[in-house]
Image (tube, rainbow, N blue to C red; front, side):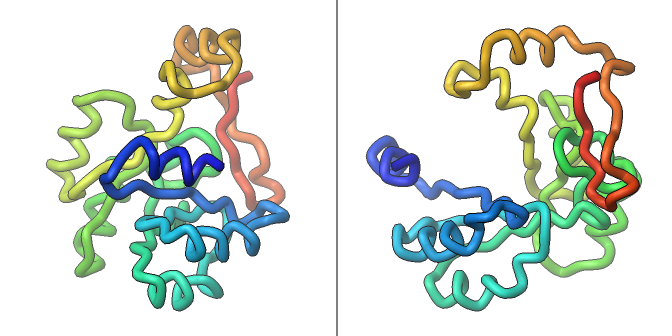
Length: 166
């Protein structure tokens, strides 16, 4: 329903994020093909088994790889290296466009990402507080009022680190 709503609202490309740890990831992976979604981002797992299928349907795939592509400043599932040191390393190591992620919440972070060699940014937590997001208003207020020391990382012992509000 959300994909069809996006199609109604724009004639521009849009994307669907497939969280690979979800129980229904396989269903969603096929659904984006059926619905002719132009872009897929992935997280929380390896998209390897879907890449060829998506490419054969003309879908641009943007995998988020937290160990070498997403800085530890981000919310949700995170890597272990900071965005500032990570992005230049990735830019130097690959011959494809790099999208920076992790702790980017405003124009200053976007400008810094471009200076580090990225061609774009991915922002997640920033959009939790948008009018369009249906996250509860109390949570939005907590995110907006949170100071730098009010988050912590859990899940490191299970190899699935996640940044959360305390």
